[in-house]
Image 1 (cartoon, helix red, strand yellow):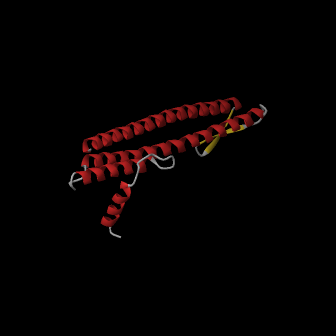
Image 2: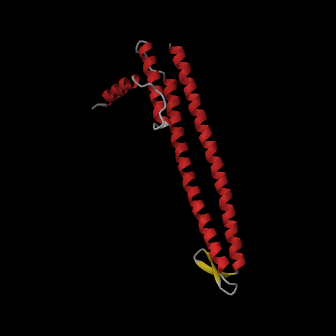
Image 3: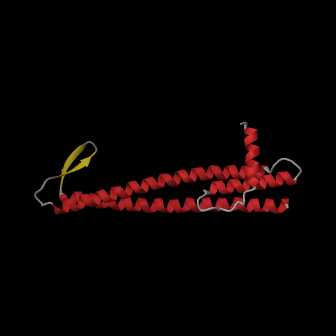
Length: 170
């Protein structure tokens, strides 16, 4: 199958698309369908002139932004999960150290070596680890919210541009 045939087949299949977002369809597929439908309609209405390049550029820009944002969101999710595991590990270690007597020798890992430290010092270090991890989780969550809002805003801008193009083409 040649790429020209695939493009023609895709353009024909898009004309039957209702372009309604589905719960299971990713937003990229919905926007792709919508953009292709607008391009196809403007192409057929303008007596086979060049399709609207402005919409194509905006769509390509939105796709790259969505890919970058989704990658950043996945990285943030992985970091949050790692921090949550670190918090749980630190809390479990703290509860185990709390049950130890004062005469027990406790070693703390520093790089490749272990240092003999007081139980109170180890517990203080564990508590500070938990606090830092919780602060980092909060900052990652706020960053995720910002990324999601900016992505939604850019999608809405593209939809508005497509609607304007549809109205002017009609």
